[in-house]
Length: 435
Ligand SMILES: [Zn+2]
Image (tube, rainbow, N blue to C red; front, side, top):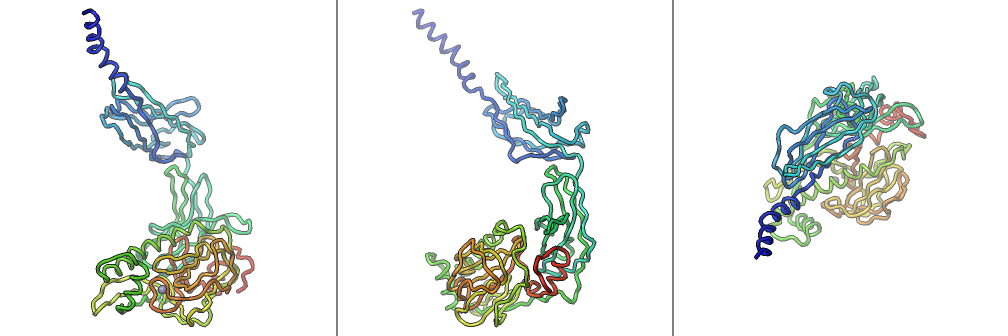
């Protein structure tokens, strides 16, 4: 009998304690994004997980033996998984000095045992934003055009370049061992008028600085983009759908429009992502060459209305030149460079992309045959394959396009030695370039 009572006591009294103890957890703390530096008011997010929620979270910055509270959770939270955001920096903690510091997070569980976890994260305090000084040149631009800006960044910085609207173009060290930086940048064909290109520098501590580029839009040089009706025949629709959506089913018009939108979008993303496969040097020294003896059947930023049986079924902007010569003509590299893509690419068919350095790349689409491989170095005028009509092409031609840091641009200036002299070679060392 006594044994039974003891067992009952054990179950009634000890089990709940055991359960509480076993459920007692230590909060797990992590920083969802990397924080390398702390500036004036740097955003910090902390992620805390605890099944019982948290009673207390405190953040400190510790530097030279002193500990400065920077944030505290206002009230206990029962949430098991939460992210809290706050800012920390020199603005609210003026005692901080340039140099190393430690960000310390303490989180206390909401359960009976109130276990506390710590996270220590080393940071660098950067009290001053970088400074930027931009060249004093007048930059003549138009929609779809590229240009080159030179500038200097001083102070502590880890990222710089040119920002145009929501697009960024990387900064590179000046070639030839000269001091300073430069960026090739584009004013995209669809960038809202009035957008001011700016040089920017950031130090990862929320201390971004920008400086506007002096630019002009001469009205007479702004190309007029044309609008065309493109008649979609049943034969063309069947060719495109059969080739690019062979296992699909359903309405042909819907499948065609889906290819023209979703696949085009995905293919353009693939092209744009090739910006990271670029050389940090000029791989070329001559003007870009246009495919020999070619006729331009379409030019850059043509607006196309896709007409089928008298109705407009779609609209797209054509971001390149359609260059026709004869069937299966040898496709010539526009300039020296390195092949960074050589494979089928949806609407572009068999496609080659050549990198020319500093984010500048040429694109060749609709080939019937590709004779180069990714990684190959090619020479200006070198035949890389044969033209064709693979992908969304109704006849044999080369879709020729250019992109700069992933933004498709009008190639025509790059065919012009005078433009290259005035916009590139005059501003940076372009070894071997002769106007
Ligand atoms: Zn084209």
